[in-house]
Structures are given as C-alpha cells and as structure tokens.
Image 1 (cartoon, one colour):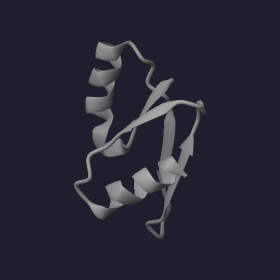
Image 2: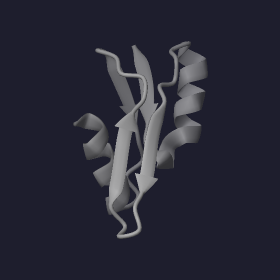
Image 3: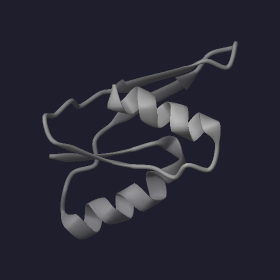
Image 4: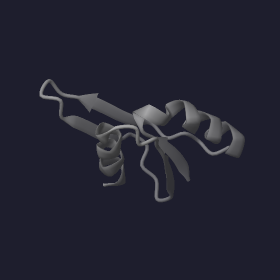
Length: 68
C-alpha cells in the first residue's frame, strides 16, 4: 500500500504517511505550455490511498488523472 498526493496536498500526505508508517508514493505532475496537465504514478501499487484538497478545478482534474 502507498499514499499518493495531489500537488496541493503534499504537506498533508507526508504527515499522514509518517503517522501511519505507510510509504508516500512518487507522482510526476507536469503542466504543458497550453496549460494541460500530465500526471504519472512513478511507483504503481495495487492498494493506494489518495490525499487531496479540492481548492480549484485543477486539483479536481489532477485527482481524476491520478485515479485513472
């Protein structure tokens, strides 16, 4: 099991990871020149927890790309 975080929730996810002793998975988030998002999980696993804050539509889109 790993904990993954969107870019808006990295601080929260690292605290949850330390407290629960579950490793924080690595995620690559890139924004292209036309403002499109690219999200790639660098350490795939079968069981995952995703931590996010949905403060903007970009956060929601990043979450949807992580779930996919």
